[in-house]
Image (cartoon, rainbow, N blue to C red):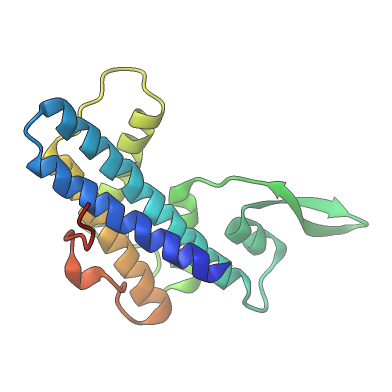
Length: 181
């Protein structure tokens, strides 16, 4: 399963970057908006997919408590025969909380709250939520999209550096997609 999520998370990231490139090349403002929205959504899908892969791998470590395993696997905790156990019931944690948990517990240096990209990831989550749960008009600019995708890239790189001591595999390519559709 880990290989499949690694492949999917990489595909989602490349798709996000390709839609961002398509938005820049699109002449029609409605087309630009559609590509930007798709890029933002796919960017956060990629972040969550990478986060899930890192969490799944981290959950296999020995010495973890029930609550740690619950957060990493997004499964609920129950009291069973006098002991807390992780159940098969889904327990969703906020993206920001899971990121902080991984940084604090598995990456050196803790939560990088002082980094400019950390604030931008939080802003991107807000924008993604506005798009997913619309209550008013939504317009994503090219600059805002680029800031958010760069923040996702920096976040993934910081996670990889903190956990694996090496850069995120596609970090050097920045926002240049390998896709050509």
